[in-house]
Length: 312
Image 1 (cartoon, rainbow, N blue to C red):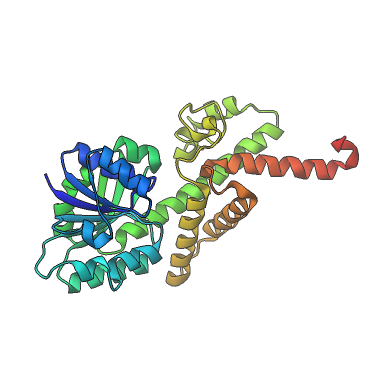
Image 2: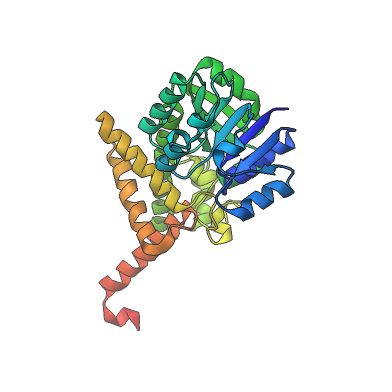
């Protein structure tokens, strides 16, 4: 059993902390929302504030925060975790947030100067994976830090991959989610086109799921209601992974592409489309709502082209 501090008990952090408790670890949590702290206590954990108080005596400190700005403040601020940790402590530091690569490397370097192993370990799998304990962890950091973290990460995930040195986990997450964002738009466009051509969604799914168009966005997360019962499309696009978060990750990927000189024209177009989707008020729904948004936009275009008589 390890003593763990968990900072950030949101939609992902709360079930991840709960799975650590189920695995027999002692978890002290910190969050700005008192209701989340109460939920942790009801699950058998302990609540503390601020983050420095939660980390007292912790063998491992895990953060799951919204963005690089919050992550940097929690770790590097004047009252941050690195300033609070006593000299000679052996705490393992793990950040599971999805942030920019540069910030991940900056904080890891500061941790190394203070004598700590720090890992960037963003996740894939959404809230369903967090609840089921089946997340994929993409881990950047030292070999020794990764070896120390594996057992803890295994309590929250099914696939744990050491991607390389500091920042490699974030790099893997951004590349993976760029693939996901692009593929979801491609699948959504294909279903819109199929509908206009008189091909049923069920038939397109039946064919493409066994053909060269097969991909995760189609077979596991189909954006059209019906073919994949567990997909958010069958729950009015209640978020497993919100469209606003997909936009955040696509924009981070574009920042990384600009900084490294990589050509990502499809990634740029995906970011532009998700920005428009979010600005249309769909940011709180699952990112697969792209199908419904594209279909609605296409119908509006067809009505406009048909003229006033078609609207009556």
